[in-house]
Image 1 (cartoon, rainbow, N blue to C red):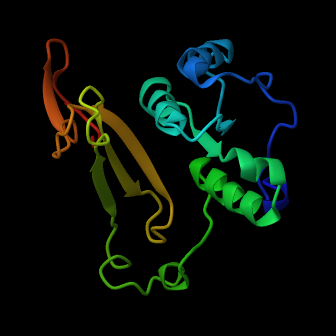
Image 2: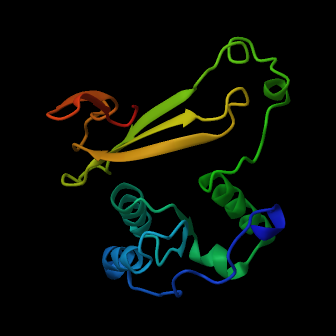
Length: 189
């Protein structure tokens, strides 16, 4: 489906397809990352269950290993429904740096303020664990537009932070490096 939408994929997977139990997900993701030697660009995962594997996969892939992942529901993946696969391919396209839509007004530079001056549009949010989960971290995310004046391509960063902390802890900070002096760090640099 992705190829029919204009995306270029290597027909041979970088790593062999695996099937694992939910309790082996974390170990398997680390093994896959090590086996690919950092060359893995996208990991498509058919979820083993609906009991929380999605959160585990996203936490490990995005906050620990830096792997782009796309999860699919098992029943939908088995059916190979065209509409479902098209929706998944749209998600993959964006995650791989593509663009699914563009505003005609943006292309024609007719959006007030945004079209007139170089502009970055930011979004940020913090997601917290379910009630009763006292040991899991909260997840902070920041997105920003990357393609002025169209402002339709966004990049995001995800970071684990202190449990139930609403303010993003590492959004922006300046640290003092003994060799370099003041160094800008955090999610926004």
